Image 1 (cartoon, rainbow, N blue to C red):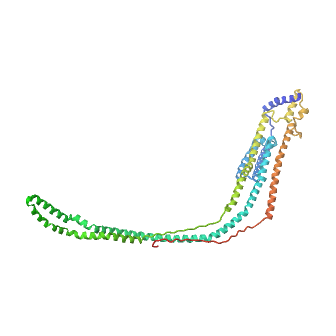
Image 2 (image 1 turned 60 degrees about the vertical axis):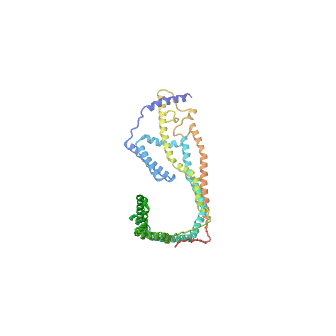
Image 3 (image 1 turned 45 degrees about the vertical axis):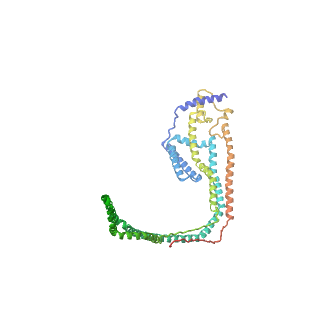
Length: 469
C-alpha cells in the first residue's frame, strides 16, 4: 500500500512536470520523414478506398453520397495524416477506441444494422413478392375479364358511333335549314314592313283625308248652324224667316265628296284586316318546325370491384411494410455516424490522456521506467517490481495479462450474445424463406382462362314527333 501510494504521488507530480516540459524529438533524416509522410498519405487513401467499397457494395449507398463522402474522407485522411501528427495519432487511436466499452455498443449497432439492411430487407422483399404472387392469379383473371368486356363493348361502341353519325347529320341539316330560314325570315321581315306601311295607309286613308282637308262636311254644317243662330238672334219677331237656311243645309253633303272614296276604302279594309291576319299567321306557321330526338340508351352490367382488388392488396401491403423500410433506410447510413463518432472519441481520448493523469493510466510505459531510474539515482526507493495488488492494477502495454478493469470490460462483451442469436435467427429465416420460395417457383405454375357468352342485345326506341319534318 505504501509503494502504491508513492507511485501515485510520483505520477501526479513528476509526470505532470514532464508533460509541461517540451519533449525532445529525435532528429530524423529527411528520408525517414518523407517515408513517414508518404506512408501516412497512402494509408489515408487506402482507408478512404476501403470506406468507398464498404459503403457502395456492402451498405448499398447511392453513388452520389458514396462519391461525396469518400472524396471528403480521402482528402482529410491522406493530407491530414501526411502533414499533421495530431491527426495521425487520432486515426491510430480510432481502432483501439472501437474495442472500448462504448465502442462495443457501436459495433453491436453496426452489426445489427447490417443484419437489418441485408437479411431483414430480404425477408420484407420476399414477403412482398409472395403477396404479389398470391394476387397474380387474380390479376390474370382480371386481365382476361377485361378482354371479354372489350369484346362485349365492341358492338355497343359501333352502335354509339352510328348514333353519333346520325346526330351529326341532323346537325348538318339543322345548320343548313337554320341559314335558309334565317334568310327567308329576313326577306319576310322586309316584305312585312312594306306591307305594314301600305296597310296602315289604306286602313287610315279616310281619317288622313279628313285631317288634311279639315273635315269639310263638318265645317259646312257648323257654318250653317252658326248662320241660323245669328239670324234668329238679329231678326227678333221675324226669326221664323231664318228657317230657310235649313233648306240649303243638305248642300253640305257635297263638301264631303273628296273624302268619300278614302272612307269607303277604310271601311272595307277594316273588314278584311281580320281575314288577312289569319292568312298571314297560317303562312307563318308553315315555316315553324321542331325536331325532338329522344334517346334512351341503358347498359346494365353485373360488375364487381374485382379489377381493383389486386391493386388494393398491394397498396395495403406497401402501407404495412413502409415503416420497416424506413427503419432499414435509416440503418443504412449508420456507418457514417459510426466513423464520425469513433474519430471524435479518439480525439477526446488523446486530449484526456495528455491532460488528465487519472485517465486510462494503468500501463507501465518506457517513460515510467525512465522516471523510476531517475528516482533511484536520487536515492528514492524503486517502484519496481510491483507487488501483488499493483500487478492486478498496472501492466505493460505489450503484456498478454489483463488488469481487473480490462477483465470487467471483457466480461461485458458477453452481452453481445443475445444480439448474435437474434442476427442468426434473422439470417436463418431469410435463407428458409428463400428456399421455400425457390421450391414453390419450381413446382407451382398455372394458367387461368376466363370465358363468357359473347351475347349482346341492343334496344333502341325512336319517338315520333309533330312538325313538317
